[in-house]
Image 1 (tube, rainbow, N blue to C red):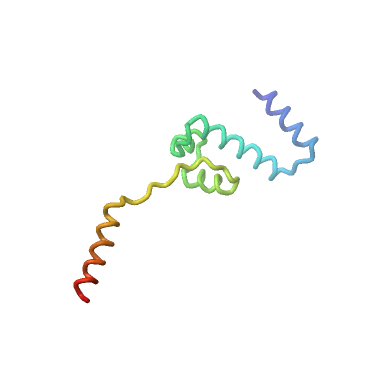
Image 2: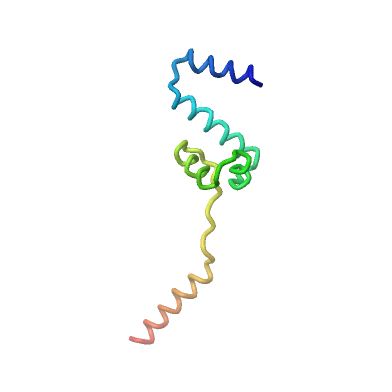
Length: 94
């Protein structure tokens, strides 16, 4: 494995990458691969990477990685009942 990393480092240095760019390439690649392996489960991915879940989410935004699960919408019934109640109150007040 050390030989693989040495070859990667040689390639990055010879290609003229700055340290910050090289770190970004490695971080982004690892995050994408671990998210794919955990089927988008950010909690599992953050544990596998050894970072906090909030750090993972921040890096996903920074590297524009779209691995987030869609947020659940609030239950429609609760919102609908409130809206109806307000409407009914307004009608009664008129």
